Image (cartoon, rainbow, N blue to C red; front, side, top):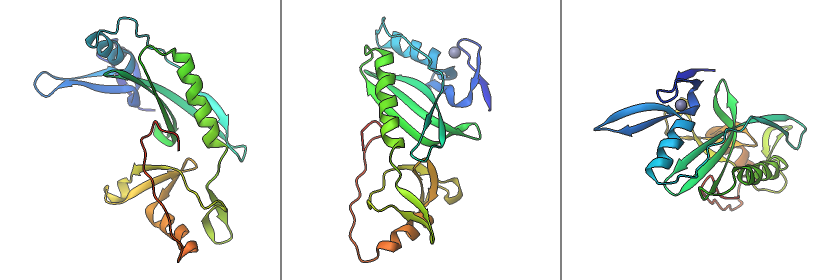
Length: 194
Ligand SMILES: [Zn+2]
């Protein structure tokens, strides 16, 4: 896992824990989430904000496969985002989830909400590896997230469905099973429930 040094506390932390904080004029400094949240809390006058670091947890999906989730907390303006994500080669990848709360919400309650959300999502499989390759399940519903596909230089999305990275081409082939059908596409923020 790639590590970077936080200029606030001097700790070596995983690169995904580092926030570039500052402005074009004053310059940027590389802070860990804890130091960043502390500075953001002071700037926002939130004296009671408590930054808690949660250990990773392991949860099973519908097929009994284990997924390990890491957490980061991010204080922004008047809210707190708690993110859960898996790692692929040391970087966030696979399943990702987020909940948003007021800065004074109990962090453990927030974690509880996030874990409940993860469990609901892991219980549902949208894609099946069928006789003819990847297929959309019987329900005809797909939930996932839209990610950057480095191989496509950002021109086409990489989809993350059931925690799996699915190229736009592969997803297109899945849709051809339904040639002649109509569909509905809804896009919503990471923190919303799908
Ligand atoms: Zn730090």
